Each structure stands twice: as structure tokens, then as C-alpha cells.
Image 1 (cartoon, rainbow, N blue to C red):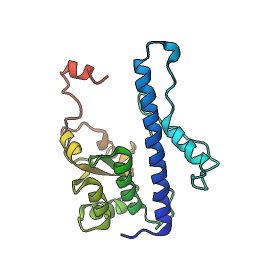
Image 2 (cartoon, rainbow, N blue to C red):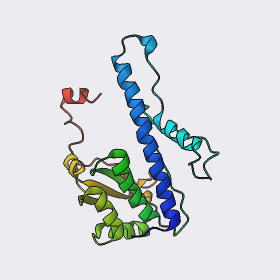
Image 3 (cartoon, rainbow, N blue to C red):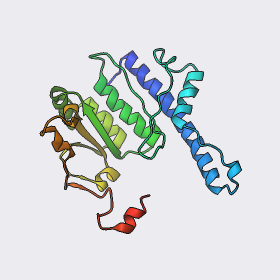
Length: 218
């Protein structure tokens, strides 16, 4: 599938950012390792925020999109305070968001994660787009699915929110779960079904009564 010039420009910019992220993450990890071996507290170095350093390197090189070059970096952290990379595409209506999303997954898998397997949560805004997207992604002849299959070495697994999910699926496939944005709100009893306990998710955490295994997670 041939991309339009502006679509290729978007992906080229993503490529630059992923390269910078990998460089800065490697540097941050080296500092972490050195700190772990250091016995003198005065010699421990602060670990840099590698997504911010990657952003700064693109800014200094004049590689940020023109619309973003004067906007400060917006940090993201996970539940334990670790820096998390974040990127957003701003594409006009009809600009090919789905093909860019599939292509971005491919680049993130190959350049950043450097693996063919994993889990992708793909969120769409409404039922119409949900239906179109899941139909396309389940069709092995569709260009969107073919992009994902190249990223996964042919081991793409398209799932919905109530489908069974096992750790082994994520270990051996690129699992793409589609979710409609409306189903993630907490306004109605129907939407709250998303948050109910599920008995068909297995292998991601130790069994509830395995105290030692739970302790080893932290």
C-alpha cells in the first residue's frame, strides 16, 4: 500500500523519535546499572527522563513538527512513577488514521520494542468505525491487516474486549484488542460491564493464594 506524502512525513517523524528514544533509553539504563553498583551515595547520578531527552534532541536538531516546536514537553509516568513515552498523531478527517495507526504499530514493534509479539489496545470513537476497523483487521487480504502481519511475522491475533486472553497469546502473537471509546465510560450500567471481573484472562499474575509469587512482583 503506497502512502501519501504527508502520511510518509508523519511516519518519518515517528521514526526519528523512536530512534532518539532508543538512544536515550540506552543511556538512562547505563546510568541505572552504574548506580546499582555504586557504593558511595555521593557518586550516584540522577537518571534522566529519557522521553524528555529524546524530545529535546529532536527540538535541538530542528526535527519536531512545526506545530509542536514551541510547545513544551508533556511528561507521562506510569503507576510507579517511571517515565513512559507518548506520541500523538494529528491527522485531518479522511487523512488515513487507520493506515497510519497500523504502520505506527509496526514501527514501534520493530524499532522500539524490537519484537514481533505483544499487546496493542486499539480504541475507536464509535460503533461505525469499530465495525469497519475490525472487519478490515480480520481480513488477511486487507492492507491494514497485512501491515500488522508484517510486524508480527504473520502471528497477528485480533480480539475483542470479552474474548479469552492468555499470557501465552501475548508471548507468541501480536494481540490487537479493539475497544470502542463509548464502552469505556462509566455512565451507564451497560458500559460498566467493561469493568466487571472476567474469568477468561489468565497467566498475567500469580494465583490469588500464591503469596510468594505476588511478593516477587515488587
